[in-house]
Image 1 (tube, one colour):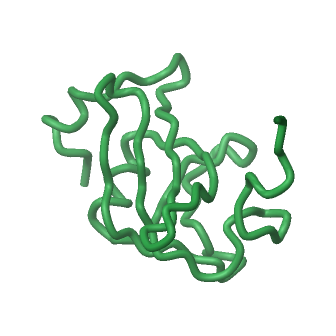
Image 2 (cartoon, one colour):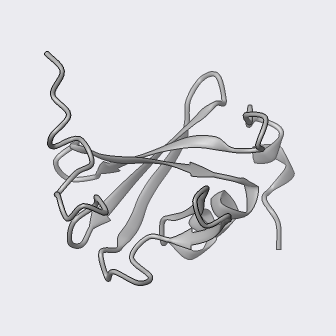
Length: 111
């Protein structure tokens, strides 16, 4: 079980082998969170329909909502033109942010 080689070849990973992943609400367009994916996380996201990320703090694969119940059902996955960012359009159940906020961008207004 591994990522399709044609998809893997398009990815531009950082030094840790990760690509930035942005979760966006498929209905409202709201940006929900930013996380990281390695090849395995992207493969699982594409094949299971559940948003799956690489947890840098736990150093392991993390299925969004596995412990919290705040799940992300994948609607669409896109790769940006440079291959260094993934957009995951999801149906969010519950809060997207680990703080309990609807999005991770609720309290970060800079201007």
